[in-house]
Length: 313
Image 1: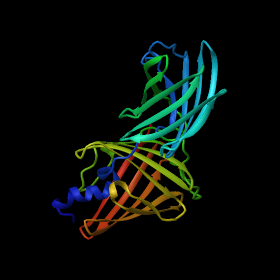
Image 2: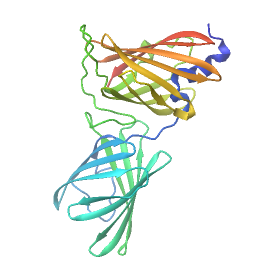
Image 3: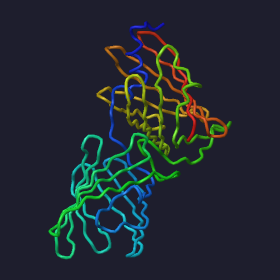
Image 4: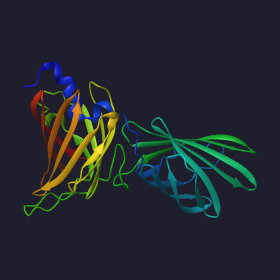
């Protein structure tokens, strides 16, 4: 059995990244402008605007649809978050931009020419803790003067791609008796009352956002507990090839494969000079609304079992 003195340490092992890592947010999703919460300063606000963001860092793609007194606009901007300059066109207008991280915020610096005047725009993107609100604070500078704007976007259900805190809630098929592969995509909220963490303390809250395009699976996790709030991302492949993730400097090596339509993930790592293995079996209910992860943890400190029950949002 595990000794009490090792419980905190093994919790770190069990949740790996959740207790050691802080990751950058993912802005993927469909975002609708809330005009009443936004502030465009002296400039006219659009009647409506929706941004569909596909964020696979460092690639960032934003497809915008807006309607205003000037008519309807549709344009797509492609960026890279590694600071390299990119050029996009909005109609005939050429916009040069660089994008880079500032802690957990994304900073977009753009420059363009408008009616013969040089214009610079600095936009700082921040995501709310629940992942449902995207705020873009903009400072616009030109020879005519300077203004500040705030654009507040709200995430829509069934949006595109994945985010650090939300994902499409598309219905997922369950594993069939014939062994058909399951798709786990969606936003999953931990039901702590139905879960069992054994001798280890579990988080107070946890939400996993899964983007599953077999064989690639990306899981963005947000959790809160005695150790504080944690955000991290893990990427694995279901074809049996080894994947390495290094949240917080802790190296996790994982292989994943299918067993009778269920996903089995085997992870190994070293914690305080102890080799640790974790075998997790993912089970989806017949209606696709409940995801159960049964984990067996083994190390020289002992062995324990856990069960985490997630409900689809």
